[in-house]
Image (cartoon, rainbow, N blue to C red; front, side):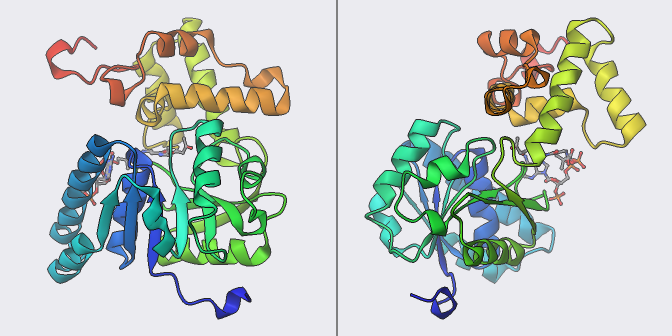
Length: 295
Ligand code: CAA
């Protein structure tokens, strides 16, 4: 089927109701799309629904959405723990945890469910798009669509071309991102794409600086905020992203390029082993538990 004859995208499937999936769903709903949100965990779906509801209410308070549009958006969200509903999706964005086997398995199960012309996009931050696409029989209609945290705030979407991705797939994915008020930037499929290839070495170097006693956590962050005008210091940002996610991305860069310059700081590894994952676990470089606040 000629892609130019396809009906416009109305219903988007979002797989994974974690931080990124719920942020993507929130932005889609706020821009008039219907969303099929799936996750195997009913708890994650319930938490995502609460967070999306609160986010849309905030959009009304801030004058970004009318009360009527908010009501329509609420009605356009269909949470489900079953992938079968994806049969009615016009475009599918996977935002499951960063595990190649898990993601490939999701795409393998999606393949017979989704209509053949539907584009599959992965929000992966570090896994090869070409590799994920090979789990499907639609590598031409497969791309990366990499959003940034917090999704409702960050303007960028990296649109990643795998080795077999067709130009019309990139055009359609970019146009979806633009319709959400985002700026799509097309990049090729290399480890870390552009964003994490540049960001993660900076975060890693900040961790090395703390490990080697060059300065403490607050001072390293203050240098980058006050000296470089970054909205957050690299360690504060690592806590927002998740230290486990940062470590996984550094490992993907290290393994992808076989270059020691991407070697993760032993302190980062130690913190992940200790369960200090950043905001989501209550403790990372900073402490987010008010009752045990020591930093
Ligand atoms: N979810 C949704 N909205 C959020 C939010 C969150 N987690 N955190 C903040 N916001 C919103 C606030 O509600 C507020 O919006 P409105 O008032 O307009 O409703 C707006 O962001 C500004 O928030 P604040 O005034 O509280 O705080 P701030 O001005 O300090 O901004 C920030 C907070 C936007 C997070 C800013 O510090 C920032 O831009 N930090 C850098 C974030 C960044 O670099 N993200 C990319 C991470 S890398 C990644 O995601 C990809 C990857 O692969 C690892």
